Image (cartoon, rainbow, N blue to C red; front, side):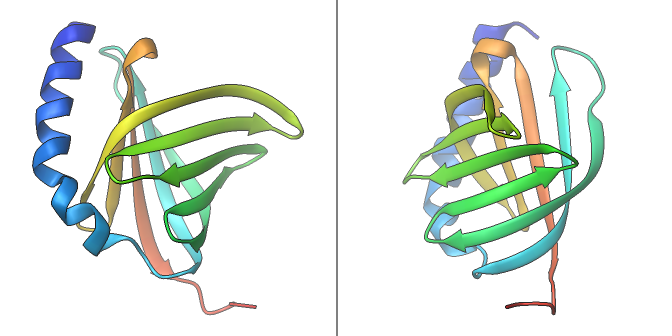
Length: 125
């Protein structure tokens, strides 16, 4: 699938889901999660992630020593990817919630992300 076609399909899908986005934002707290990333036509690479949902639309997703800082706005998510103190990437993308799963696409890199939240952890501070 070409980048323009992915962008068009995802834009239509995210507009349809935007009204549900606010209703599905999880409660503040820590979650075990599963993050899948796929680039181009390659199958997704998935693994365990830790999510710290910090407040209205803000989350930090940690996979080993890589961290994704997410800021959800009304229809877009701002993503900052870091390794330790070094910023690796930054992009803005439309997003959508499907049940407990946040989905977004970095069109410039033809990368698709799917973050599936698990149950909120009991070890809350």
